[in-house]
Image 1: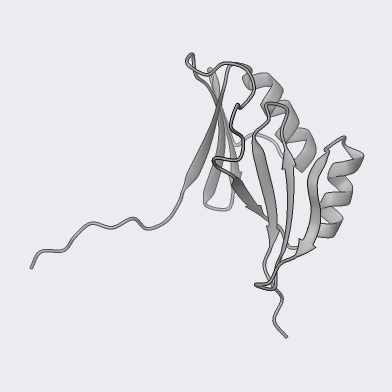
Image 2: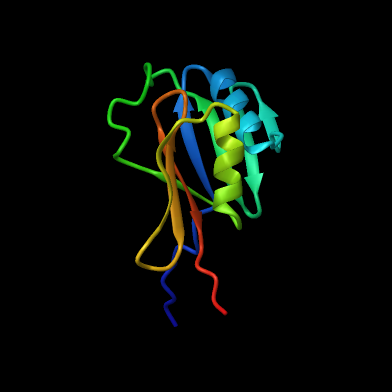
Length: 126
């Protein structure tokens, strides 16, 4: 029997930068989280079974020039409370939480290097 290999899901995302400290400070402060693992020029945050990683890459230069190309989506159970908390920490949203046609909420912001990140809250079903 020939079984084809398949992808089981996304286990992590890496944001490459030349200023690891800047982004680690931002994500630590904004989401009140501590790094899960710190290596030289590479830091991992753990969200359940998924990792958000910040790493140094010598071929990355400055802020993201095309920030809309890829968006990282982070989940939350209370997008409105999270957004208020983030605003008090200086985050400027491109889009405050809005109800989507699929029943959930989405909010969008940029990190200090111009990467676009979204926070999503799944619909609640009664």
